[in-house]
Image (cartoon, rainbow, N blue to C red; front, side):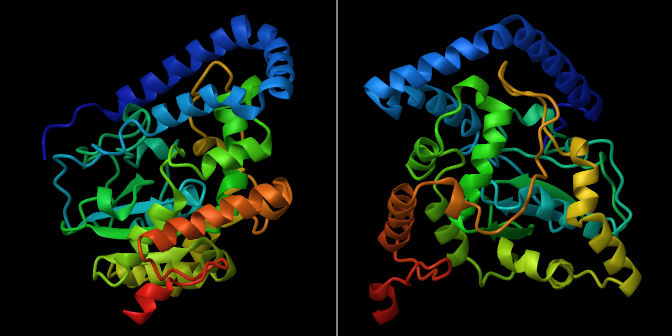
Length: 342
């Protein structure tokens, strides 16, 4: 692997400098203009429809997706790498924290998660430890954790690395993403929920489409180095999920270590250290102190969006799965009949 391109110290300095700069710009521009911008967009949407929010949505997606295709180019992953790839708002921080604590045998400590975990497909990878940096977070097991939102066809599955993929009901991903991006990115330009859902189901979606992510990882679930999980199953049986992840990594946890990991990665424990997971301000509209560990609930997508918008969104997801012949059948999506009969 090539020499480290940036250090953890540089990561911390860049986050601090960019956060301070955007905070100043928010005070100078976003705060005085927030009300007028919000009013203007609402007024325009009554005439031109919710397409008036599309430029802001497109801008967010272009930025967030800018490194997807090239994230792992040239990377030399080893058997000590854990790539935790969860779909956008499918419990990413929770699962990667579980992986980190498993690697650390429940003794993991950090000032900010971005100092100890790399995220090569981030909008700004330099807010995270460098992918090449193997010294930033040593662990007693020798493992290190790499975050990702990528589908299986954009990660080096042929490498010796271990992969843990996580999906979630797409309606709940959309609901969680709506609240998250309203605080992190959009501010006064936040679209109505149904407009967000329509975009979330499009080919331009942030982190790509749910059906592509889910179908590609589901198809690879029987690979020896791939563990495919669902958010709902982890939530229902967290200790069983921790044990499953540890087993996938070849780590034998003692009962005491399992308890420590379960305690450290519980909802209440992570909510208490939300500031150690929340990212730096992304735009001048970003608010300080948002919640990345917000609710972690099941079924929120059924209440945030209209029935009509939800039906169309789920039709798109089902169609996307069917188009690639996926037999993924959770969340009410019927398996592809052609593949079943093949």
